[in-house]
Each structure stands twice: as structure tokens, then as C-alpha cells.
Image (cartoon, rainbow, N blue to C red; front, side, top):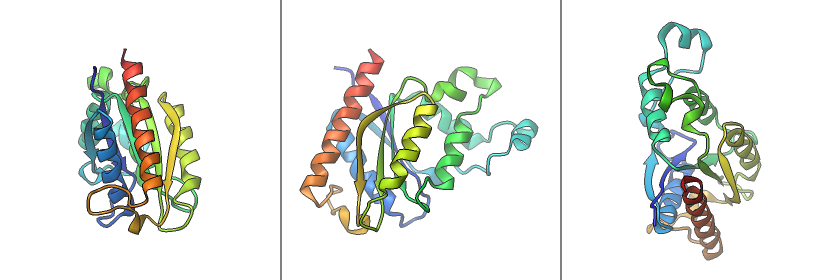
Length: 195
């Protein structure tokens, strides 16, 4: 059976970001569901605020090109999203926007081709009681506009500072079960899209 390659990334670069801990739990669940997983740290892919004039003058930043290649080589993406004022983080939006830009030096592994036809899943994380529920709809829309097939399953991890145990699993068995189902659906969707 084909083993899809799934990227998991948190929408925050903050060292102690709750979304990073939740991303580790998601990576474990996706790996257990049968995928090869790469946990992406956006701190390794710094990019300036997207600016068309900057792009025209200097082309794509080197780190953006590296991330485009990882996205292109993947079969799917799982994004863990903190909620900033009810919406997506500027870091995540900027990253998705830069990676959507075509690279004339590598047209096959850039632009819309890094997203199109791949499976995607969204997870929210928040120290509050809603778990970042409001951001999920925004990120789903953006990934869909980019040509990804966003699976219907989603998860909002409330009180994320306490949610992940030392074993990188969610402490709440009901939430872990939801995460396991989401991971299985993402892996299955990535396999189906590949065949």
C-alpha cells in the first residue's frame, strides 16, 4: 500500500507556541495512520512580508523556494492554527502566499503546483475554551482556493497548554480519538488522490 508523504506545520514561530506542541501530536497521529511525516518548523523558512515589487526585483526568497519543493514533493498538508483575533496568523498567510508564487527557474515545483490536487487537514489550538474553532473556517477556505482537497474532519484543541502529554498524545481520550480519525481520513484522502 502506498505510503503518502504528509507535511505537518504549525502556524506560529514562537518558541513556546501551543500550536507547535499540538503539531507534534498531529504528526504522531498521522505517522501512526500510515504516512511518512515531515514536521515543518516555519522558523526554518523565514520570508519577508509578501510584496510584489520585492518579488519583481529579487525573485523568490531562497527559503520560500526550499519550502515550495517540500510542498511539491508531498501528498498532503496538515496545518495547526493558533487563532489571532478570530483568524489566521500573519505568518501562515504570508507563507502560503509566498509559496503560491511561480518561480520561473522551477516552474514545475512552484506556484499553484505545490498545492493543487493534494489533501489537506486543519486543526486549531488555543489556550481558551473554543480551541481556535473560528480560525478553522478561514484556513479551510484559503487551502481550498489554493486547489487543495480539504477533508471534512477538523479538530479544535482547547486549553492547548495542558492538552498534550509527555507521550505527544492528546490527554483527553475523546480528543485523541477525533485526532486519530482525522489523521486516518487525511492519509486515506492523500492515497486516493495519488492513485
